[in-house]
Image 1 (cartoon, rainbow, N blue to C red):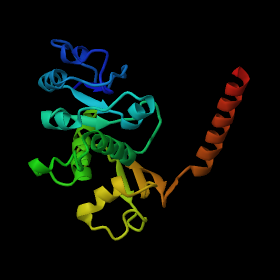
Image 2 (cartoon, rainbow, N blue to C red):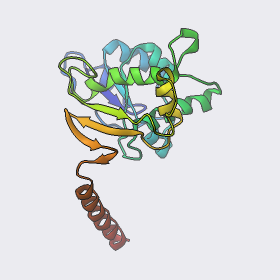
Image 3 (cartoon, rainbow, N blue to C red):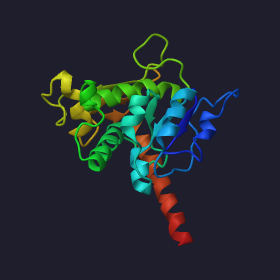
Image 4 (tube, one colour):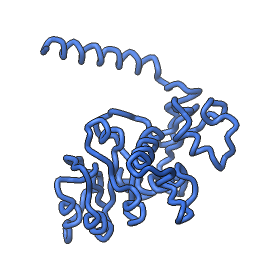
Length: 224
C-alpha cells in the first residue's frame, strides 16, 4: 500500500496514477498544499493508497487543514506523523487533528461522526490511525495480533489526566485531558525502553542530547 504525506502531495496524481507500478512501502514526504479536493480524496480511495496527516507540522507551517470527515468517510487508510519534529506525541497530534476541525466547522466531536454512531471521538481516531499506521511503516501486521511486532504503551492509571476515568472514556481523557504523556512503560519490538516512566538508558541519552544541542546552537551562533 502506498502512502502520501501531508495535506496534498505535489499532485495526488503522483499517488493515484501509480497504475502498473510498485508503490513505495513507506510514506513519501512532499510539499503541502492548502486543501485537497473531493475528487482527489475519491481518487485516492479508488487507488488503494493511504495518507499520513501531520497536524502539528501543518499548523506550524500554516499549511491549512485536511478535510478530515471526507477522508474518514472515504475509507482511505489514515495515520498521523510529524515530519518536521515540531511535536512527537501522538495524543497531541490527534488533539490538533480534531480541534482544527472543530474550529473551522464550529461543531464538536467531528471525528466521532455522531450521525453515523461511530463512537467516542478519540476512540474512533485512535482505531482509524492504528489500522493505517502499520502499512505506512511497511509492516504487514500491526497491533495486538499474531505476527505483529511487539510494540506497546503501558498507561499509568494514576496519572492526573486519566485518574479515575472509566475504561470506556480513557482514550478521550488521554487525548483531550492529558498534558504530559502518562506512560509508565514502553516496549519496542518486545524490548522495554521506558520503565517506571524513565528511559532504560536515561543518563546516556541525556548526556548525548545535551552535547548535540550544545553543538547545534554553537554552530548556529557561529553562522549568525
